[in-house]
Length: 117
Image 1: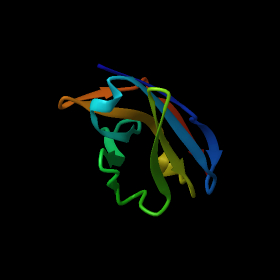
Image 2: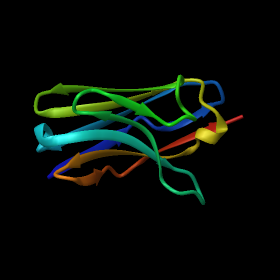
Image 3: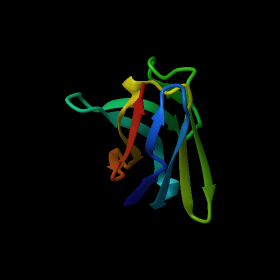
């Protein structure tokens, strides 16, 4: 199985930046895909950015050019990052890290990002 722990959320003014981090442990070498998702109050969970095992990246249209997903491996832990620039109030949401292992998505506990105008 896979365990994921996010960090790095917080409150920022519009136009500011935040960097989210996610530490994945467990069967990390069998993870086929990792990504960041978010859920705003009253809205459905949506994909923000995904990185495959082949390091191909896919971004939601709403964050393309502003957010960057990246991944690093150290000491049996996969670190997933989301650099968020030019943040807007509509980016306010709970952000979740996910890793896909044997076709099943595993999730972190989430971290809140709040952007005020």
